[in-house]
Image (cartoon, rainbow, N blue to C red; front, side, top):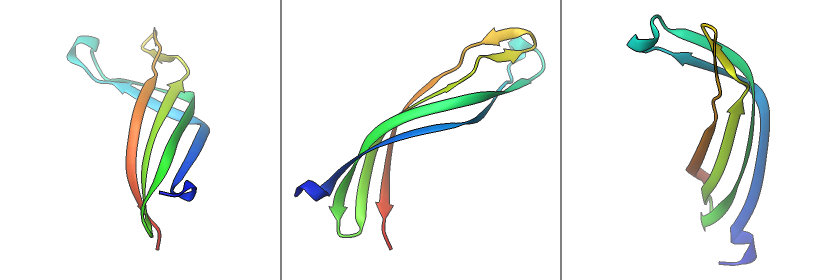
Length: 87
């Protein structure tokens, strides 16, 4: 592999997250739409002429959600993997 075969990347985003709860213990389903942000980083590893393997990490955090008066903090940590093919 040469130096051009591995490409680090970072990502960031702002948006809206919709969360919902639907469980017999909570009664009827409830949903909450909140502001959300995410950060991430990873590596793109060249596997062939037109193919790149991606491996990364992403953290997503919406604002505290309210479900029928109950305040709930939500967050998500994700390890993501994928394959890109360039045409």
